[in-house]
Length: 316
Image (cartoon, rainbow, N blue to C red):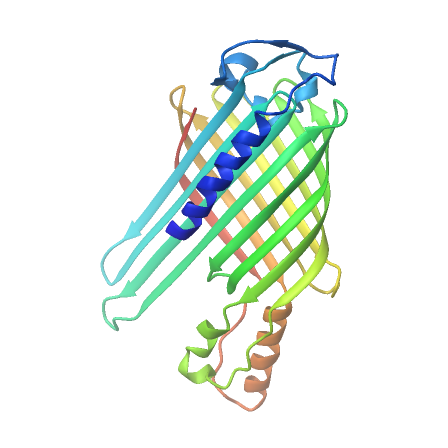
């Protein structure tokens, strides 16, 4: 995690510097007003301002607007089975007039140990997301960015880096309800955790799966519904169709509930479904089927993982 953090910091500084150089001189429809060089977007534009198209605001501060969210959850168990699970995320949204930058980092780690056998299992993952948006109209924005998923032992992904570009459309934009849909072209490089599988004694004859690269179509849909002043429901769906081998694809669906306890602190609950079928999963399934055919002991390779999480969120 330290290595990724060291790379994120200079990137974030670069993004901040870049977007502060952009002005609204070419757009005469939006009025600007001075509020200092940096200010809270929530105080000047209202809640959920960072999710909206900047061209929907009639008056736009020329300050660098910010929104910061920190989210953390923990669960543990003691006794015959000792388990600890940590989930953490941080998101920074910066807006300089018409340009919006979103930087997000999430990490999870769980450790399980059986008191009787002494066996231990560690599952972890890290994800990084960076995107820049620019409005073309008051209902469509151009978007470019990249994602990085690393050390994901749930999906046996050692490293997946993707760049993407496309457009984001506002389907519904009301004061308490926002729904968007995005379509993007993407290109990814993937390296798998072959060593983790070969490290299991009974699978030492497994032939490693080669790294994989391909272009793809990436779709993203988001919904935010402020049910009351203190309760917000969110839904996010992502789907990626690999173009090199069309039988490979992956999708993610997440439902969330945010209950505000104070102005800056909320209780959160979420349910996530994460599905993936790729060249590694296909290769492992074929390998396991061959072992079953000759009566050798074998496990299973699942394509769908689900997660239930509760935690606390701090936002500014």
